Image (tube, rainbow, N blue to C red):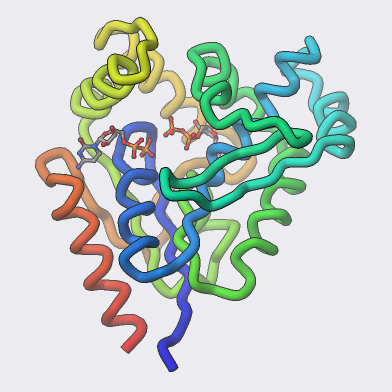
Length: 224
Ligand code: CDP
Ligand code: CDP
């Protein structure tokens, strides 16, 4: 029987994690789990309920009364908050601008990490985020730290926004991404950092297919 491994993919915004993770999961018939969507879902609800984002305790109380459900689909992953499909809403500029503040709270991370570990317990998963290799799935058989230059990542996000009809400029996106990189890398609780046993993959000059193929081959080696 083929071994159902865990694949952890970490890296900054726009590196290509979710796009590539989805392709890898499909090729291997694994489940794709986007952990960033969970932090976005919490931020979305906290903003809707006018909770002060620095108030970790109030967000925790809110989260204890919230149901976050992830459902795999053809397009990737659908996210429900209390039964409502928020997959598009959690990608808004407002959520993006505020998510790193919420994700810095250790108590919120603890709750979401425990959900993520349960989702990955049986293996056969590709999980992407910021702390997957260092914290959530420390024993993952394959760990990738994916990155690209900030200019390229901003360019990619600009094209994403154009497709979604969200107004933006490359210069503003570059600033937003650089600030989020800084907040995510410098926070105390599980910062974004390359795990010692993770492989570095620079996607700046790689196509999506090339990057995905590289990971699929590495996974097949681990499973054989
Ligand atoms: O898609 P994008 O790269 O813009 O971000 P994301 O993966 O949706 O993650 C949004 C934010 O959630 C990140 O900027 C982090 O602040 C936080 N996050 C985290 O702290 N830990 C994770 N495992 C995943 C996301
Ligand atoms: O999940 P993460 O924030 O790391 O990045 P993403 O949302 O998967 O990728 C951001 C955008 O860059 C998507 O539109 C991808 O199709 C695109 N991309 C690309 O053009 N070339 C790559 N090698 C990787 C991603």
